[in-house]
Length: 243
Ligand SMILES: C[S@@+](CC[C@H](N)C(=O)[O-])C[C@H]1O[C@@H](n2cnc3c(N)ncnc32)[C@H](O)[C@@H]1O
Figure 1 (spheres, rainbow, N blue to C red):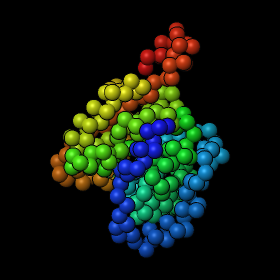
Figure 2: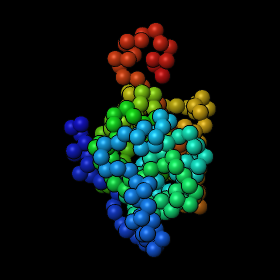
Figure 3: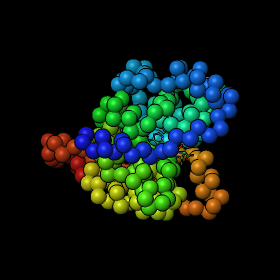
Figure 4: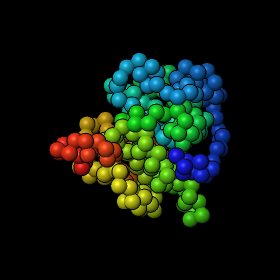
């Protein structure tokens, strides 16, 4: 993808180590080799030893909500990617303590993971809960949700895969709306009840709790990726073509 090279020079995060507890550090060092993803191209049926749907969460933070989802939906395989090491350590601890077998983690930039390791049209859902808002106008280019990134998301989702984004910043919600309004390959899902619960439900996240204390309103966006044009043309009588 031509845009990817340019896109990847602008990072959507600043890597601050912050405070990593001894337990998180130990978990990072000892449990990542067990619950971490390989660094090569991924084969999900080999990794999870099943053919169940695969959901990717980008920027899981401290990981509590992802662990909760993995526990709630054992029939879904979850992949989480996060660059913040204390968060990776915390989620590894949770996976280990709760004996979760349906979740694997990567600690690299999500754009690199998507571009280099995730096969095209292999994911059933991509979820991005409370991406860094990057408030200052000169930093807006760092926002994860950009046309080139959405193109990459489309490339990695299965046809009719789901993209779920949540934000508690009105300005970022307006930005997401503007980017997705330009995207002809995704359709906004207003009537989310039609989807199975695992595609729509999410626990309250840690970052969201902070927003709630500030009386922020949370916006959840659900989009479905349209089938590639050749499939629509090939099955012209399929009533689902324009979904
Ligand atoms: C505002 S926090 C939200 C964390 C969590 N989703 C929550 O709601 O509590 C955004 C997270 O995204 C991570 N992040 C941002 N860009 C990323 C990228 N390109 N790859 C992986 N993680 C990323 C940051 O490190 C940060 O932890």
